[in-house]
Length: 155
Image (cartoon, rainbow, N blue to C red; front, side):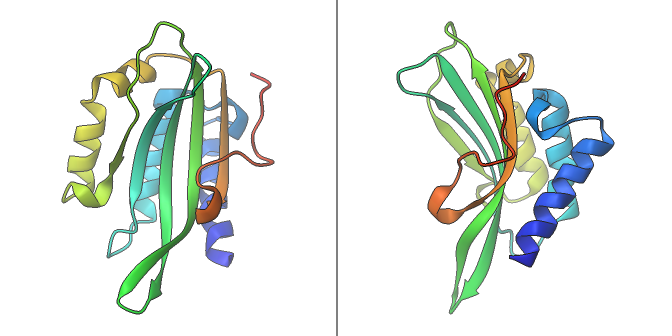
């Protein structure tokens, strides 16, 4: 769990250095900071960086998640144990969203992953909008992703 604490605190420190609080991350500056963070904590093999966009059922909210997964060796397999999550929620009644997720290990290089994500129209649309709330937290694989004590609705 020491690694989890380190990884979370590092990301929170990077946000703070840019004048961003976990409860008030704007989309573009949060994404730029997350890319910087992902480069700093890069490992081989790639444990997985993900961008996920999900409409919330029964509401007009859309959730955008940046995730840095953590894995542990389990025989010949790397088992996901959790990850650092930056979650942005948008209230967008007029935005039609189909759920999707991109993973860095599906794109050869981190730069290619970033290109694919940033060229996705719904991602670009969300980058130009203001989230209604945000949260940064560690999530165990059993609860990935989902807010905890670092989240806030006070935007």
